[in-house]
Image (cartoon, rainbow, N blue to C red; front, top):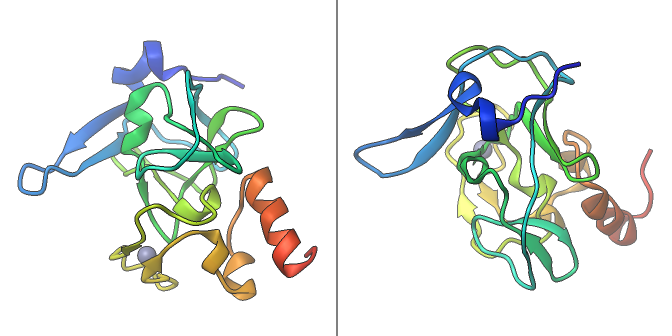
Length: 163
Ligand SMILES: [Zn+2]
């Protein structure tokens, strides 16, 4: 399996699209991926004690800014096609992505209680509307998503172990 590194392959694999009217950035795939494919490895240089709207949660009071920095442009969807696997340090594809499609992840997959909750407009049939972190998901909603090891532990501590 080929693991792409965006550091060197960015122009071939992804591009950052900036919406001129809103200034919002998004990460667009320039190739197709199948579920299970790694999209990029990632790493971090600092661990911060509190979250911002750009960080990914590693643990209690442990939040990172992703590198390569273009990964901060991966936006939220309630019907995500990618997942930040922190144990493997890989952004992985979780459902097929075509060339030209935006790469999207589910913010609560890595965030327990978000710094800046927002109203989602993703238009997915299962859109949760208010995105505030995994802490606020119902057990039914939790079953639809994959979560980082840290969030799985938090959910288990609150809701009990689910299989
Ligand atoms: Zn949504």
